[in-house]
Image: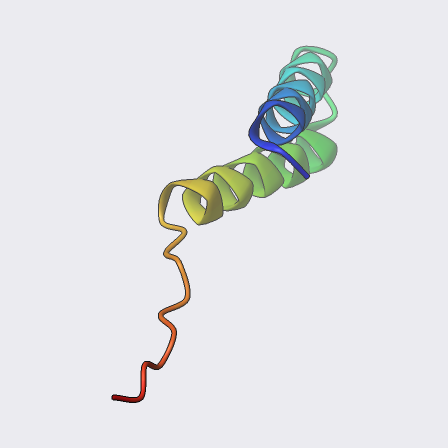
Length: 55
């Protein structure tokens, strides 16, 4: 999944969570906000895997 697709997915989940919150579905909105926060955190703190170089 490339960066644009991931950004669109995170944004869409956030908007759905916001709409759920406005409609009073607090359990669903909390779930969507949690998924958005975790996905954003994973995206920001992603580190490349170091390869072992034998010399």
